[in-house]
Structure formats: structure tokens, C-alpha cells
Amino acid sequence: MGIKSVAVFSEADRTALHVRLADEAYYVGASPSSESYLVADRILETALACGADAVHPGYGFLSENSSFALKCGQNGVIFIGPPVSAIESMGDKTAARALMEKAGVPMAPGTVDAIADLDEATRIARGIGYPVLIKAAAGGGGKGMRVVHEEASFVSSMEAASREATSAFGDGRVFIEKYIDHPRHIEFQILADQHGNMVHLFERECSIQRRHQKVIEEAPSCVLTPELREEMGAAAIAAARSCDYVGAGTIEFLVDKDLNFYFMEMNTRLQVEHPVTEMITGIDLVAAQIRVAEGHPLPMKQEDLKIYGHAVESRVYAEDPQNNFLPAPGTLIQHTPPFGHGVRLDSGVEEGSEIPLYYDPMISKLSTWGADRTEAIARMARALDEYQIAGVPTTIPFCHFVMGHESFTSGHFSTHFVADHFTPDMLESSDPALEQDLSVAAALYVDQFFHGAAQNGTGNSPVGGQPIPVSRWKIRRD
Ligand code: MV4
Figure 1 (cartoon, rainbow, N blue to C red):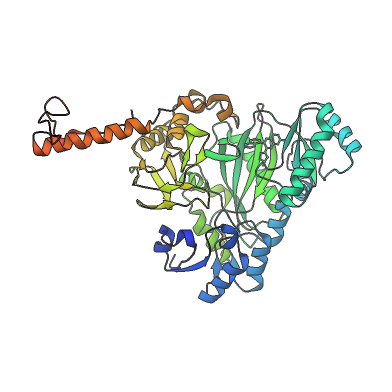
Figure 2 (cartoon, rainbow, N blue to C red; figure 1 turned 180 degrees about the vertical axis):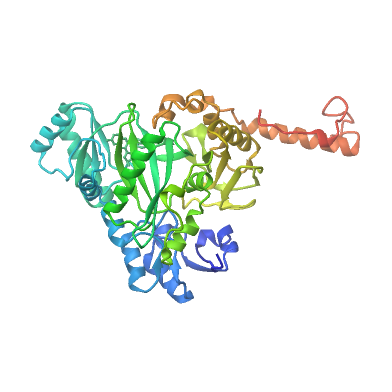
């Protein structure tokens, strides 16, 4: 776009890839994000000092922080995101519910406002019918939620949820919704300009997740009919209009077994999984965000948009799927990405990089495109198979497991997929002791190949048989 980029970095990220790729980069503080990436004043000072026109807040850290957005605006720096008021109202889940009710967006039966009176709350829960879900008004992303199956435990759950919300968010307000069992998570991408034009870029499905951490996302969803897509798309636009949205945003819905859909929340930022939408629409969402922030009108209308094929994204984390997905920061000794038609890797690392322990241990996002879902999945399985990472355990084997699971390939899955179908013993095991033995055996073999007799002092070959040409070696995970 002809725009110079300025990166910011913490102590842990001094040598990170984004620092090297940017035109300029500035240090913003110590490794903990609370002392660097989350210090709004420090980021803003840096933007002012280097003369930046705008700040792109990414998808973590300050991206949904309304006071940072406000400060940017007050200091003449464009915040590449929605108006402060939209961040505020969508950040408060009860305020969002009130707006959705007014806009006629379907929601799970429940209370619009936070409920403090326990007798009244009990009556409301009885009216909704059990199970119900208690959610924190200041929550989101699954924090501070409680499922209640019967009235006997309702009051104690309300008290516990409110206490949890107070300690997590400093705001104990909670509200109640009908609990939707085994839902699917389907979200619509919205793009709006500053002139009142708004389109949706269809949906993503993010049902394969664990503990509110998405692992596989895809676009489009294989359960939506064209009619339902149109209906949900219209509801998503109505939801975004209700807060005068500008920029890229996402309306999250829960979809039940009978394909009823319910507004869950709105994310007022670009999301991690945006590549799958880019792949099926051909639209560069980050470029679109920047064009919108510059004041340009959207270059397309809803009728111009079409779904091309299918895309899948696997999140590759330095986590050990054999060990309850324990984060495993460390050095990337090897990073050999897959290539080929329809393969995209969004990566923040390179061989030799450290995966710091201070932040989310994401290594990369691997996305594949196919003419249809089957082709996108086959290509993902192949790309995951070729992707070679050494030094840290990764979620690659888990993602490979999902690509091969009948419940995923057939499209019959829900947000409970991991709980319903996964145990660590299902992964092809990686045995560090065996890998070490294999490395030693390979080294001895090469030694023998190049030097003839083995150098082990006995004069006998440690590996029997004739050496084969090295070019025919292939190290396979199985
Ligand atoms: C729900 C729900 C069932 N019924 N609401 C999780 C994150 C937060 N944004 C809301 N969440 C849920 N809300 C009702 N009425 C189930 C979840 C939920 C979930 C939603 C999407 C993806 C994964 C999930 C995992 C557990 C719970």
C-alpha cells in the first residue's frame, strides 16, 4: 500500500521477525505485556514520537481497549478500529444484549439486564427452564460462566459467578441465558466504512476449540444453507448497525441442533482466524481496515460478494497436546513450512526463534484453500504432514488428528468435539528417547556411509547391511 510500517517490541521480542521486517521498530518496555504491549501511554507516545498517522492494534493486547482508542483519537493518531462507543457497548455483554433486542437480532432466551435480586433471578431461571447459563456482564470469551442444571444449585451458582466476575473484572454483574447444549460456533465477518456502507463477508465456523481457545476454523460453515446464510448475514448487519460499527468486526452466533441461531457477542477487532475469510472472498481484510480508516468508501456491495471454495485454518501453538496442551516455550531448532497451491502460512517466527514464555505461545497459522471442503481438508492434512518443527512440541499432531476424524470430515461436530472425541493416546506418539536413538543411529549410518568402516573402535558396522544412497532417505513421522 506504500505505507511505512513501524513495529513496537518488548525485551523478549528484541530479535523477533516483525521487528526485522518493519521499516522502523521501537522498544516499549520489559517482557511482561503489562509493562510493554499493554501500556497504552507508552504505545501512544511511541506513535507520536515517530510521527505515525495511525495505529493498527492487531488482535490481542489493546485491540479492544476503548480508553486506548479514545486516547489515540484525542492525540490525532488514527486508531484502526471502530468508534470508541462501539468498543464500549459491545464490551459490556448486557449493553450489547439490550442493543440486539432493539435491533431484533435473535438471542437465547434470558435476561437483558444484569440481575442482582436472587429471588427475581430464580423466578426468571424457572421461566427460562433449566439448564441455564450464568454469564458475567463484563465477561466474554468464556470467563466467569456457569451452567446450572437445577434450581437447587441456582442461588449458590449465582453467588459464585458474581464473586468470580468481581475478582476477574472488578464488576460482579451477571445475567442469565438458556443454556444451548452442543452448539456450533458460527461467526459473521462484517466490514463497514465511515459513510454508513456495510457488508458481511460470510461466516466462519470455529467449533473445534478447547477451553475457549480455537484450534481449527473454517469458512464457510458446512451446516448453513444459502437461505440461513442470508438470514444470519442480515442479522449480523443489523447487529453491527445497532452500534454504528466502522471497520472490520465479527458477530458471533451459537447455532443449535435445529439450526436456530442466537447472538453470542461481537468482537470489535480483526480476528486471528481472518485468513479463512480472505481465502474464500479474495479480500485483504487488513488492507480494507486501513482503507476504511483513511476514509475511503467500501469498494464493493453485498451483491458483489461471493464465496469461492472452502478454507481451513490450523493454529500451530508451542503446546503439548500429549500433556493437556501445556504451553511449551523454547527454541525453534527447526522450522520447515509446507508450500504449494492453496497453502498459506501466517508466521511470526523463523528457524532459531525463541517462543517466549510471556505471551500466547502461537508459532503460526496454517491455512489451506480448496475448491470444496474435502479438498481444503485433504490439503491441510498434507500440509500438516509436511510441516516440520523441532525444539518444541506443537499442536500439529492434534490438528492432523482432527483432519482425519470422521466427525470433522463428515461435518457432524459441535463445540464439544474435543471433549467428546479426543484423548491424548489417540495421537501418533512422539517418544523423546526413541527420537534420540534414531538420531544417533542416523548419525552413525551417515558416518559409515561416508567413511566406510564404522568409527566405533570395534571395526564392526553398528548398522548392518549395505548403505543406501542418502538421497533416498525420508524421515517420516510414522
Ligand atoms: C453459551 C453457550 C451455551 N448457551 N451461551 C462461550 C464463550 C462465551 N462467549 C459464550 N460461550 C458460550 N455461551 C448459551 N446460552 C456455550 C458457550 C460455550 C462456547 C461457545 C462457543 C465456542 C465454544 C464454547 C465452549 C463452551 C461454552
